[in-house]
Each structure stands twice: as C-alpha cells, then as structure tokens.
Image (cartoon, rainbow, N blue to C red):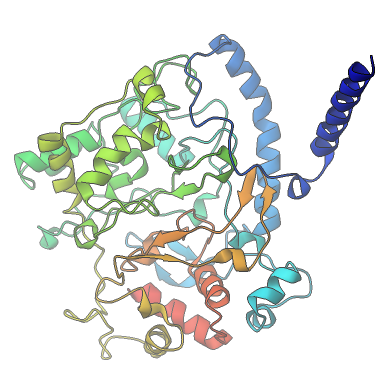
Length: 470
C-alpha cells in the first residue's frame, strides 16, 4: 500500500510539473537537447479531413503568436530607401529594422563586450535565429505573389491550408527576378520580365540554350512530390498536389525568399529556418547549402530531391513519391543550366579585381570600400572579385545570448555558415541563412556587433553604399 501511495504521489507531482511548464513562459521551460525519435510518422492515424479541420482551426492562433514575435523584433513598415534599386527597379528598404531594448542605441550597444550584452540581455532579438512561421510543423511556405502567378499559369495551387508566408512583400526580392546568363551576356535579362514555368520555358529559351540545358531547365520547372505538397493523406494542401518545382523557391534561378526548415537537424525545435539563396553565380562557388557544405552543384541538385524535399527522411519520401533523378544525365543537365546563371551587371566594378572604378564610383561608395577592406574586416571572408572565400565560418553567436525557446524555436548559435557571395547582394533580401536580417543596414549592424568592429554611423552608411554597388 505504501508503494502505491508513493507511486501515486510521483504521478501527481509529474502532472503538477507538466502543468506548471505549460503555463510558464517559453524561455523558462526546460529545453530537451535530444528528440524521442529521428523519424517521421509513416502511418496517419486520423482521417485527412479531421487533420485538415484541426490544422485550419489552429492556423489563426499560430499566426497571431508568430506575428507578435515579428512585430516585437522588427519595424515592419514599408519605408523605401532613396538610394539604390534592384536589377528590375524594385526599391530597397531603408534603415536597420531590428528593435533595440528601451533606452539603448546602436552606438552604445556597439561599445559593449559580448559578455556585457549577454549579462544585460541586450542582444537584439531580431538578430537571434528566426523561427519558421510554424516551427513545430515546418515545411515549404511560399509568398502569396508566387502562389498567385503559379495558379494563373499552371493551375497548380501552392496554398497551404494550415499556414501562410510571414514576411511582408516589401522586404522580399523583386518578382519575377531577372535572369542573366554567363554564356549570353549580350542578351541582358533573358526572362523578358516573365516568371519561367513549365508553360513558357521552351519559348523563352529555345535557340539560346543547347538541348541538354533546355532539358535541365525543363526538370527545374517540373513539379515533383514534396513533404507538404504530394498526393497522400499526409499533405498540407486541400487537394492532392502534383508537388513543387526547384524554381518554386529558386525563382528564375534566383529567389523569392520562400522558407523551409533544414532537413539534417533533430529535434524539431533546433531545426534552422532556410531563406532560399540565389543560384546566381553558382559556377564560381565551391560549397552549396548554407550549412551543409555540399561540394558540387550536382550534389546540391540531387540532395534537394532525395532529402531536403522530405526533411531528410527517406522512409517518408518513399511513401510520398520521391523523384529519384539519374545522376549521369538528369542531375548533370540541371546542374549545367544552373551553372549558367550569372550575377547581375555591376558597371561600377573593375573587370579583373572586382573593386570600384574610382572614375565611376561616388565618394560614399569609395569610403565604404575602404571600410570594407579595412576596419570592417569584411574582405577577410568576402574576397573579391565575387566577394566570397568559398569557406564556412562560425560566428559563435552563443557569446551574446542564453539558450531559450521562443515561438517553438530554441535560440542557439548557428555553427559554421558558408560565405555567400556579395555580388548582386542588393537583389537578395532578406539576409543571412535564415532571413533574420531584413535590410543591408541590418547586416552592417549585425556584423558590427558580432565582430566587435565599433564602426561609427558614417562608416556604416558608407559600407551600405558600397554593397549596393556590388
């Protein structure tokens, strides 16, 4: 009898602890560094209509929570800059958008040590990892403008019944983006201002590409099953879906800032958000994937289909209809086209070294270049002419904040991140591998803090001016 009472007491205590954790702020709850399993559930134990009904009911609750996080972290106003535009004319957003603690200025924060910032909890929340719009669920999410255009051209619906894209359109790349080819620079933007899809790719590129490249492009705009977009009952679309294409994220070989979660991390609340990187300049890169360090474009192309589409789980991939690409032809053809995608023109840069032509650059751009190669230390990693060293670097962000859970995401250091090329950087907001930095000004403030550079306000402005010229 005494043992039974003791057991009952333990069960009651556990229930009380669980209830207390449920009521506590996320940042105070215990963080489990290891999940219960690495595998997704293969067999769904509820009818699809019931799952959909539950997810639709949860959608506004999840959205309110995530929107509150965004508004707490960022100034989301549409405030265009008067200086610089993207390749097809979209205005850039002005100013750092990260919110600071009350009474703190950027200059004051920049003079503090990492230990002091951490002790006083002053590191901007906007510069910590950005959670997925629904971190617990994850999966591919597309901006509404892309969903609308694909529906118009192909009658294929990329709408998720459970989730919408989160960042405002004015912080995203222009749509559709331009396409520049290394093989035909004389043509300029070969997209003709159109979104390239299965409906128009042949008309746009026949007579410009060779047959292998055209076939590679066809595969890049052909829908294949994916974790949330497939024909099983384990999907997040109302109707069975033909799937997604490579160019649904890498729009016109560039990006529309579609988001996802990396497939190679467990448990779920440690998985990192992905901001779709551009494929421009793929031919000069030697690493692919923001943190995966894939060694060739062929590896990247094959990995996306086999693993990234299905959260790195080959078991669930088989159920949902994984498309196994043939390495010797299909993967090679796709990669051959991807390697033709060029950076946008940068008329102020010299031909060989990629630095500013002093006869064409403004005084602010020239001062910014001096900061870039001097006090700013940017060129240590971003080496001209393409402004990448093709390496990975760990910024050790854990120096600045404690590990906490926010919006179902554990705030941690990021580990090694590849050095993205800065050529054409103005066309690729938001920035960093997960899109947490909304503007170029935010990238400058972020690295000023993380690298302890102590740049003054004028140096920061000039550095932004220089990057807009790249």
